[in-house]
Length: 577
Image (tube, rainbow, N blue to C red):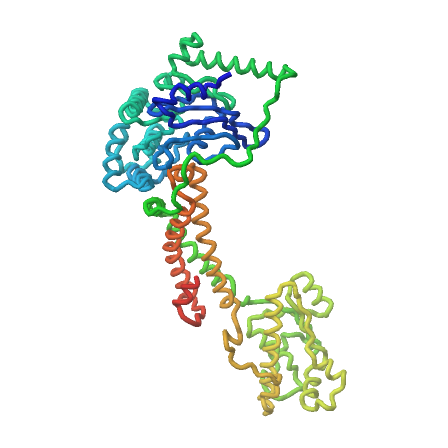
């Protein structure tokens, strides 16, 4: 049996060659969801082709394959308009930038198609008048649903393409305007030799098309002119004809399932992928890159609050980082068990804070040094009680002074050769730390050692002994890079600014691309000829400008306001960022 598409191809093969020819088209998204089943279709040049069918029958998938955004699994599609610039595409969803004005929308798509500024202005004026659209400066989001659909239709007509592919162009449009649109399409095909493929839910409206394709379950049930279709099936309306053909298809499908001898159609797997119906565009085009840049700047202009947030965000992050992170914690709690003080630490005030007398508790002088470093000392009566407090996270460590600590320390310093093991043990300050937090534990160890050296130096100074003997015989000279007492904040500042350099562009770029993808905007731009390379290049240019401002603000906060050290050339630092 000859398929509808094949018969029509023969009919128009000579005088009226097809603008689109589809043969044996198969497409599925998974083994259980076959969308196109060996579909044959022929669209004669200079005609209107009405593609009718219920939702889910494969109309949108077929159109996506025609414009090169979806690839067939098997079969062939030939399109006479070989480049995307010769195709005007109106998707089922609006796919318009809601923040743009009508003029900005037309300018963006006009630039995509390589039109001059004068051509865009002239064509925009004609389309606004024809489609009865409001002032060109009106924002798309403030238009009614029907007006937005007319703007989307105007975008498809903007560059006067040879082939128009329209998915539901008259939904929500005033009947008078809908009739005007159809008349315009008829004039285009009659006088301009344009070809139109249109899908619609209004079946009777499609009677104005030259050819109708009735689609169901991924195949064409019929492909004829409306009058021939009605005459052939003896029906008065297209709905009746569609119903009759659908019933025949259902009966045939049931009979095939009941017939055990019927050959079950297998899904074809070709040796190589079908060729794309359109020639690939150049990787880069100046007009398309300019259009992408215009689009990005239009978006930024219409989203001032978001842009302000993106500029303020790194400033706030850097401020919070320098304020809350990188500074040594203050007021850390340390437990103290001091057995040489009979009346507790409160009695330290009655002892002198200087002098060379080892008969008074020198532990008070060391503990005072720790207090001067903002440590909070909590006294415990027993070592077991203090260790339990560490386990309960009440203190970060315990300092233990045995009875006779000061006298033993004096013997250790004055007569080291005569010091017994017991003397050496008593003169030690025993420390137990909570090492679960590396930064805090290292900070405690550093401060307790440095403050003990300061305590010994003060004792040696009071006794008239060489102060250098109180320190270990290792001298740390000035660091070649950095500081001898580095700050964690200074160390991490370059890492933080580098992290922001990657994080902030990712947030902006990924958010913008996802927004376009979810709204069908990216798809429409790709159908218009935009390449992925051009999308990336345009975002790189915009991000370079935005990131330059963000980097300058971050550098001001980190290295001017908080005075983090910068060693080296500012120019090289900015270049590396």
